[in-house]
Length: 352
Image (cartoon, rainbow, N blue to C red; front, side, top):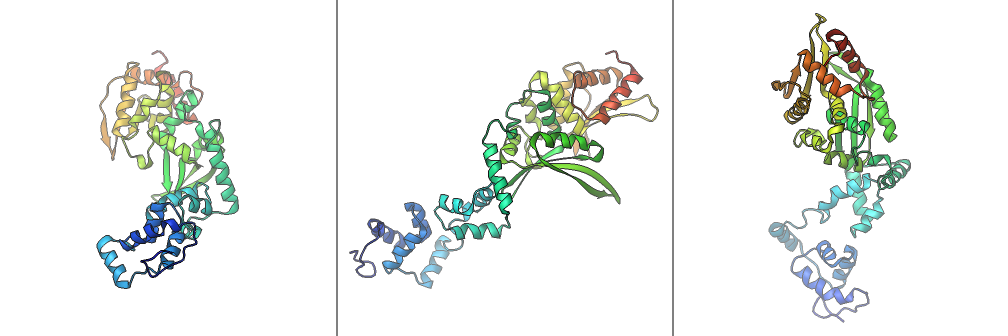
């Protein structure tokens, strides 16, 4: 028997030894959710005990708690809602999430629906398979764990320039998009990860442009790329940190990927003057210039250019050094830019 709280109550529950403690906590103002979390048990068990003990709060008491402590204004699990959405998007089931947080499946399901996160049985199976693959160090999602080859260095540079990391409602994705004539490169990257790709179009100044895009949906891959300096919305240090992950022998391949994405190479209409330039954040342009200065390229000025920065070279000796540095022993590059490189060599000669 437990006296003192709503009369004498016969205790039969295996949690009976905690009833007195729960009653005191409830009387001092804690909610049943807070008591359950504090004592590591289900909220329904605490609620049933409070009812058996005859403890109630009047409307006035509840309003006073709301005024003085802010309690009852929102679910005690509110701080977990984003985590639940993320877990669900990554493949966990509602019962699994509910069990992990000692709450009801209905509570979790309500938050999932509120955030408009849904998936078919087929999608659920795919997410579980993805989760298993991400945990396997041999899987393609660990491609960038170690940057130790020409292709890895090149793709890291290309993604720094033209890729983006997206996180929305618990879903992680790397998005890589190029214009239509360069679409074969999108396919090449998508093939590495077995990713989906599709043709897309956009309208600019009344003209329709076509491109190709692929989506690499993996939390592990996104997290790894973020650690390598490829941040969502191009935040952080503007990509400068990525250079620190590239060895000296692979730097030309990394810069070639960066150049294929955010560089420019062209021959002026007179057929004689040629220009190579690089665009991007101040950190990226500075680090690129410093790397190119190592083989003797001139220390040209960096100037602002419509919200970003750029530097360019037109002197023949600089062009030769840059093209040799970027393209000697190259096996992966944009065909259209490499074609211009060959044309420039035919104009200015191939003697460094």
